Amino acid sequence: MKKLFAILCIIAMMFAICACGDSEPAPAPASDQTPAADTSDYAAQAPATGVKTDLEDGFYMTVLNDSPQSEDDYYANGIEFREDRIILEASFVKLNDDWEELGRIEHGIYTFAVNENTEYRTGGSDGVRGYSTQTEFQEFMSDLMNSGLGFEIKVENGIAEEVGVYS
Image 1 (cartoon, one colour):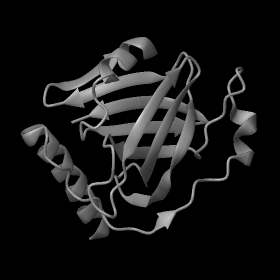
Image 2: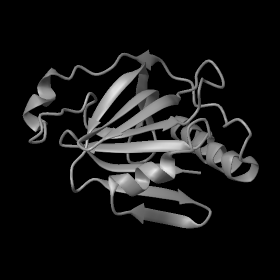
Image 3: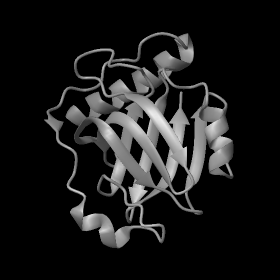
Image 4: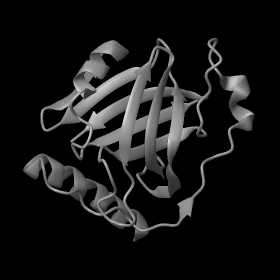
């Protein structure tokens, strides 16, 4: 039942964003906040530049909003792109492959290592679209902060394998 509720909440949030554009997202499923992951074990997975991802491998989702829309919301209110990393000021929900919530990551500043294989994507009612470079994706993202859109990062082997923004 919890799995179904989490899926329905995420789907409802995405539909609300698509339909209204400027309306608030549906509330996130309630869960206990968890502190940021210990990053000491990820140094061996750092790319050649020495940048390491602050969070353990997994699928993370947040919403591009300046502040939480409710007490339990996760949100991203800052993003910086660098050649070898993306730095987010955000809180996250961690999900498994079935969109079940695995926990919450408290609001803070997190670094995600990227490399030449990182895929940048957008999606919405017009389907999923890919960008070939981080620069193209960064240009697309330039006006999306506080848009209420979903922002997702899939971390694998300490690298952000996929980065996407979705309505």
